[in-house]
Image 1 (cartoon, rainbow, N blue to C red):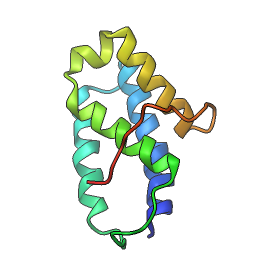
Image 2 (tube, helix red, strand yellow):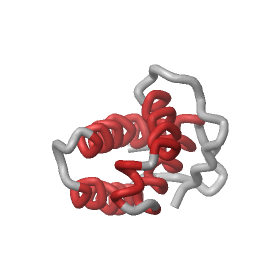
Image 3 (cartoon, one colour):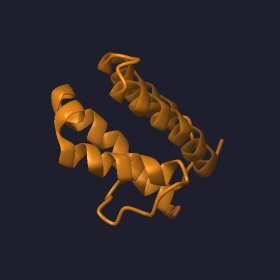
Length: 107
């Protein structure tokens, strides 16, 4: 699997996990497990140090980091953070504009 295929697949999964968490269909623990599973899978991807990022990849890594960085209550209750993350989700789902404040980088 290459980087683009990985990001396309994992972006769909990430959107599902975030939306399920926000609608109380899954606990935060599931989102956290997804985070660690994704990092583990990333280690198996063939990549070079000079391979360019796509905008989608930058948004993906940014959103994944935000979900791991912020505490559960902030992810659920902070309207500013939720709005920022929603913008990222919409972009990953193909329904929104590229969020200019995403600075996601590969692990």
